[in-house]
Length: 75
Image (tube, rainbow, N blue to C red; front, side):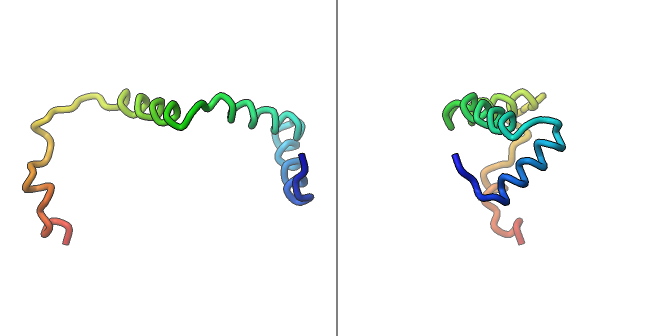
């Protein structure tokens, strides 16, 4: 694998800041990339996380159809 010199220099600086090697940074990145799964799986996981944060939901708290489509409300 090859990268521009400046990119490699920045990676060495980041690795030094984290007290690790560039190889370890690349290994960590590729491992996380592989663990990510498909786009669908990532989005499903995000949806599940968001739904867990919703404590209470009541249909009567929703806006009426007329309120949603009220064009004057956005002016």
